[in-house]
Length: 42
Image 1 (cartoon, rainbow, N blue to C red):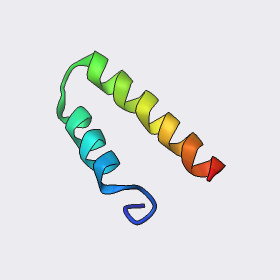
Image 2: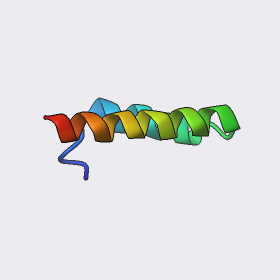
Image 3: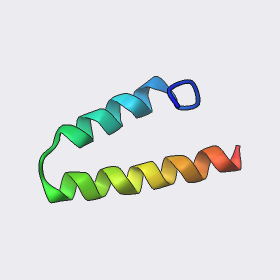
Image 4: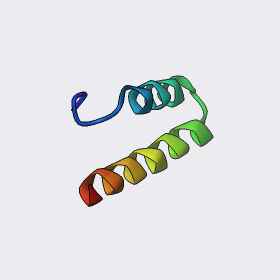
């Protein structure tokens, strides 16, 4: 998983996951969905 995603994406995702707010979690999920879609397109 780490080899398929850029380090910056992991850093951003990890940072968002540390936010204990519902907003942060929802945004992290959306960001993860976008990343998954982009990796499928490549």
